[in-house]
Structures are given as structure tokens and as C-alpha cells.
Length: 468
Image (cartoon, rainbow, N blue to C red; front, side):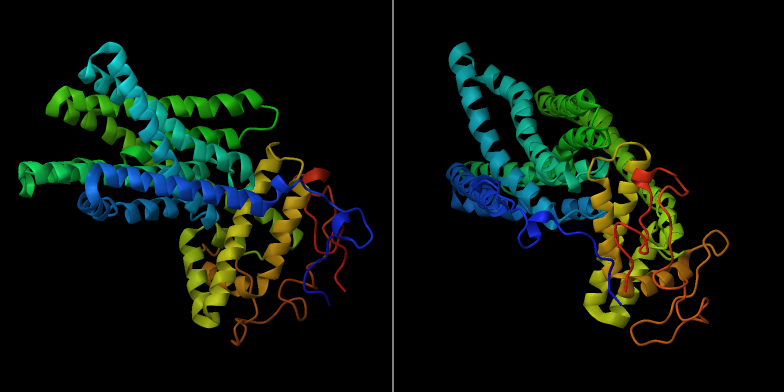
């Protein structure tokens, strides 16, 4: 008996079949090598520039202070991404791009533009003000938006909605703010060394209070607006090309505008700064926080709504849609798997949860007419990933559902024991708790949607073939 339903191989993988040839620049390792080289060189250059401006001692002080808010911000964005966790490599790329490439672009472009304006107008003070309120927001937000654009274009499978845009944009901005804070705090420390300032009255303390205590979320807040624009564009259909272009641009313009308002508040004195902070920054932060949390809950509702169709098809157990649509149930399932099966079982459950969430979102896009031409192949791939992990995941999810699911709305069927434990109860339909292996047929075009393109392939029907 096969362990998973087979599916047809690509012709290029069949002996004697046509081979697939890719140009050398299309090979993944070439792209990864080029990107790694670019980010490494950017990091080395930005390190030298910041150290030159702050000195070695100032750089170390700035580094030690600037790193403090980074774990909190990254943890917050990772928490938002827990519904459908994206690959770590995307987050590492986003942070590295913000801290290295975007910061280097900003330093070089801002310095060049400010010097050019000062030379052309013979007004260094006005050039600094214009550079901070106009040039810097445009350059910095564009540089940070480039990371979101690259993920949107080249990692499209991982970029499916608003939360993905928020997370990538927020992590990129966190990396950018980290490097910028090193520069500002290191420069402030150098100023205190020259003037003899120390304690709470020092420039370093004032800079730390404004940038680390009061506004660690400032850069993420600006760039998240760009991420939301890309996230809404990701929800658009292929036919809505104008919308897919205009929405990211609108988000970028909003990010630039809020950034300009924030930088301009520094020229209004202490009272103007605090007025802008209280009247705009705090409400905007609260509104965006509510939006992303609401979006997170909406995605969980999508999981609970879409996955029951796969219960009907026989791919999921009855208790799984609710358990997978509850973060508490997911956590309990992972904990149960770790307690009874160790880290490998917990990892399988976490992967099962992620693949099931992706399947729900894919089904939702297909039902609303926003799925691409790869719908069938992607659905098949996700179903097979679930199939491979079902032995570890289903008992854990069943346990979590028993602890969290309302018994009337979400009946929990018994599942045989796992990890060497006895079953919870008698097994209906013979030896298998949910019917004969592997759940029985579900014809194409059947309810709940009746669309042959988006119908549910069951383990007993094409395109998989029956297990033997």
C-alpha cells in the first residue's frame, strides 16, 4: 500500500523525455550567490562609512544601544506571521536588505542631494531641512520598498496577502532603522565626548529616548504602508493589472508622506515634535496595529471556512478545520506532539499547520476567481505535503480540538492513538477511524463548489490514482 498518492512527473524528469534547459542566470544558486555578494559588499561598505563618521568607540556604543528594540520588533512581526509562516530566508533577506543595501543607498543619495542643494542655493541650513523633509523620505522609502518588490516578484508563492506585505516591509524597515540608529547614537556619543556631556542631560541620552524609547516603530510604521499596498495588490486577479501597479505606488506615496511629516516635526521645536507624535504617529500606529490584528483574525476565519471542503473530500479529519483555525489549538497540538513524539513530531505538526493554511488560502483564491493557472498543481502539492505528515499531525490536532472546539459546532471524531498510546475510543467503519482507506471517492464537479477546475481531487480519484 502506497504511503502517499502518486502524481505524474514532469516530462523533463522522465528518462528519455525532453530535458529542461535553463540559462545560467536563471539557476537558483547563481541568483543566491549574486544576492549574497551584493548584500555582503553593501554591509561592508555601510560598516566602513558608519565607523568613519562615529569612530570605533562611538560605533560600538551605537551598536549596543541600537540592537535593543530589534528583537522586540522582529518578534512582533513574526507573531503576525504565525498564521501562515513565511520562509526564514525571506525575513533574513528583508532584514539584510534594510540594514545594508537600503541604508547604503540612503546615506549616499541623501548626502549627495543635500550637498548639491547646499552648493546650488548657498544655504546649508535650508539644504539640511529640505534634505530631511523631502529628499530623505523619498530615497529611504524607495530603497526599503525595493525589498518588498523583490519578494513580491520573485517569491510570489510566499506573498499572498496583506500580512505578508506587512511582515516583509516591517522587517526591512527594522533592519534599516537598526543601521540608522547606530549612526545617530554613535554620532551623539561622539558629540558628548567633545562637549563633556554625560547622564540624562547628554545628547546620547536624548537621542536614545527619542529613537529607541519613543519611536522604535517609526520606520516600520512608514514602510508597512508600502507593504499593505503590495499585500492588497497580491489579492488582485491577473486581469486587474492597473490595480496591481497603482496600489503599491499609493502605499509608497503614503509612506513617503508620513515619513516627511515625521522628519518635518523636528524643525517645529519640542512642542511641534510632541504635537505631531501625539496627533499623528500614535493614532496611526494604533490604527495599523488594529488593522493587522483584524487581518490576522480574518485569515484564521478563512482557514475555518475553506478547509471543511477537504473534510468532505476525505483529505482532512472533521476536527482539523477548527483546530487549524485557532492559534491556541495549534499551539496545543505542537505541544502535544513534542511531548509524545519529540522535536521531529512537533516540527511535522508545525509544517502540517502551515501547509493546511496555504491550502485554505489557495482554495479561497480559487473560489473567488483569483487563482492563477497553477492552481491544480499547487493544490496537489499541498495535499501531498499534508499526506506525508498526517500520522504525526492528526492525533495532535485531534487532541487540541478536544480541548478547544465547541462540541456541537465542531464534532470531533475519534482518532487512533499515536506515539505508542492507545486509541481514544472505538473505531467506526472497521479498522480505520474515518472510513475505508484512503477515505473513498469524491467526484470532480461535486459540491461544495461544483467547478471542475477547483474541485477536490480525492485520494481515490485522478489525477493521483488509487493507492495500492
